Image (cartoon, one colour):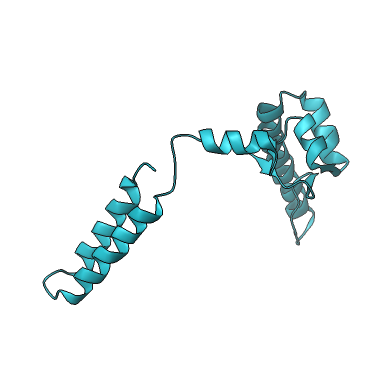
Length: 141
């Protein structure tokens, strides 16, 4: 539920309570149940923050193990977009200032790596640092 959430048009979302496997005596089972209630509360908080739904509505969905189409999930605010729709492309293009390096930048990096592979003067550590820098720097297209 954090960040931009999207689904493919043919996918389904299941909203459910947290589950676990447990074994032991009655004390162990009571402890496991309390842990699950705490986890459900935390999960419901994420759903509430994302959707603005009431806690009662969210818990009801979780308890019922609710299955939603992409459109239903979008209508309830669980996702931001359905993939391959025009608005999804616009959201991804706007992004958060992140973009992959251009093909040209990647070719420069590959060429630099090949050139330094033949040079015995540079250590593997230096090469890795250069590659990390190129990945971080990127270039505008």
